[in-house]
Structures are given as C-alpha cells and as structure tokens.
Image (cartoon, rainbow, N blue to C red; front, side, top):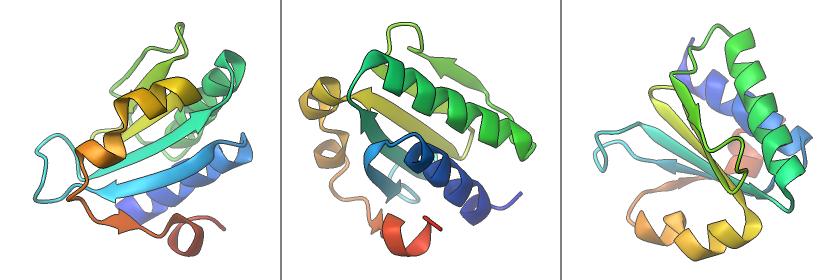
Length: 118
C-alpha cells in the first residue's frame, strides 16, 4: 500500500462523513512521528465519531494497520495512528483551541481538493 493511496482513501472517508476543513501536512523532515498529518473536524460528538470510525474502517479495508485510536469515546480529539500517517479528527472548538496547523506551520500543505479528493 502506498501513501498516496491511503491518504486519498482516508481523505475521502472524512469527506464522505462531512468532515470540515480537511488539511494534510507533509511532515517529512519536520517530525519523526509520521510522514503526514491529516487534520479535520466535525461539529458534534456523533459526527466526530462517525468520521473517525469511517477512516478506521477504510484503512483496515485497504489492509493498513491501525496502530491505535485514542479519544474516540470523548469525541473531542480522536487520534488515529496509521504509522506513516496520523489522522487528527477534532470537535470544532477543540480544533480552534489546539490549532495544529499553526503549530506545524512550517510543514508544506497538500492541496486536498486537487490531489486527494475524488
């Protein structure tokens, strides 16, 4: 499984569940944690859980190992560790508070609309 394929699949999974403001940061050379961070948010606990569940299911369907998923029950910030890709699914207010895009502002951003969503 190559990274562009799994990135496209998880971005589409988030989009299918109406995730908002999907951002993918290229973390290569910036962080040792992962090659990519995908960040998105939902507007309710139920929507955050639906987005996270769909991403997990799509990754597993592709044979990608979900190393861990944290924060699902609280549904404020769900972290899905796919190894080279870490997905952050936030509740809207939590995303504004933590502002990971600003924290990792030196990371190049992929054009999700053009490169990933189909």
